[in-house]
Length: 221
Image (tube, rainbow, N blue to C red; front, side, top):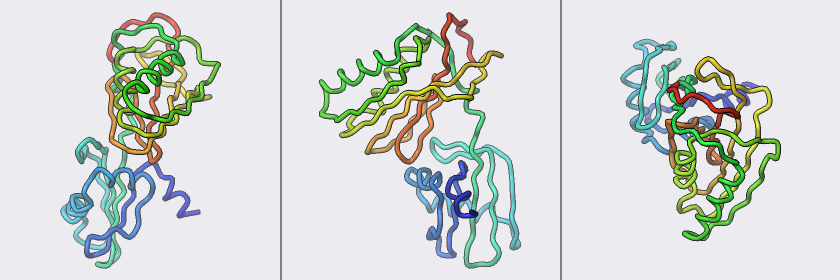
């Protein structure tokens, strides 16, 4: 059970030996380490580790390239191994901007993207749509740019849309259901957007979209 919780922890967990080699890392850490040099992380541990065998926890902003964390716990019992658990920034919704919203049919936009990208490259697409998703207001250009960035130069792409039952996002003091656009790809790159929450995971990406069905004031959130 302990290993199960470690493996599926949303926070990267990494354990090094005394030579700086990784002896364990969970799924989130694998994604993180696919973009960041392990020596950079190990050097961070050595610089910030407690002076005596124990666990040191500190909450402050930490950046490794495009990754931002809210803090860390570093611990060791002896000189053979040292571990770290980085705390992800869960306040991702605060960076979403609501600007230039247009009413769109999500399935039509994705189908257009698939057809357009098939003219430029040879990609095998598999697409499944949730028929319960209504027309919504989003920044269409930003969404298209995001899709193009993810799909570009991919050989195989799986796309699925769904409404996250029981999950909501709060924007400008209003709650909206969340639509997930799940995109699985072969080659991975870290994707960010100021207009959507983009979850980078081991299989690809999940774009989180607030389900806005009515005209909405374009305030920044």
